[in-house]
Length: 367
Image (tube, rainbow, N blue to C red; front, side, top):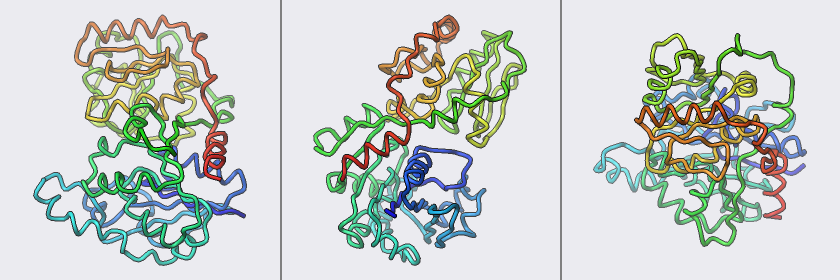
């Protein structure tokens, strides 16, 4: 059995299902042994009240935990990790210290690294482990899956420096969107692989979660960068429309047509997307947000043939985007009307791939 290690910031049992969960799932179903390696997480995460602490990450720290036949979870917990300390002088003070992150003991996982065939790194501070993994196993194939722009995530400078230094050493650099592609342009091993989907999950029959179809149901799924101003305008402009917000979003307007769910397990979000009328990619701007034009959520909305409302800065080649100017009530009103009148039968699923297809593309590229 071939073995793969996926080095990711996500925890295997999290309610939030990110691309790396689905890559691990696809490899496992293809017959690979998979180790889902969660990092970074440290006492700094505890101080910052990291959402992953809602799960038993501390109890499982630095132990190999079997979650299924041929599927393992490993949480690499360290005293500290490279984190943006927000103040320039503090970041400079810790610069050399943070470069030592990779020297912490790997304990039970070290012999497994040396005997693995494929190692996939996500865009996280755990990139600092690349050289150490390479020393432990020079024969494995290494893939850098750039799920997110590290600049958008506000990482410490040592993480950005490390990415720049090691990107060309991977056997494959895979990116999900054109804006991220442009950051690595010139690398011969660079490939554009948009996020995938598990189509069989979305094709199942579900109970429609919306109590009424007499009004449009709009869905937002996410946990950060939400455009509160959009929702304040939209819910007031269309009091008969229902806005469903799934995710840990705080300070939402208190209106009867705004329904808040908090964070739900991924499988429970599927019917909310499948039976919605309009998808919301209503995000507030930060440098690097342009990379969200092909997020996992966009793929899911498009697969369910939803028109998508997004701010003007998220320019996409997809035809099902309806744009608004942030903060402009008239622009928001026009985008909502355009989405409501959109002919959903025109939305194509042709360019959407399954995660199985994407992981096969990875393997074919590096073998």
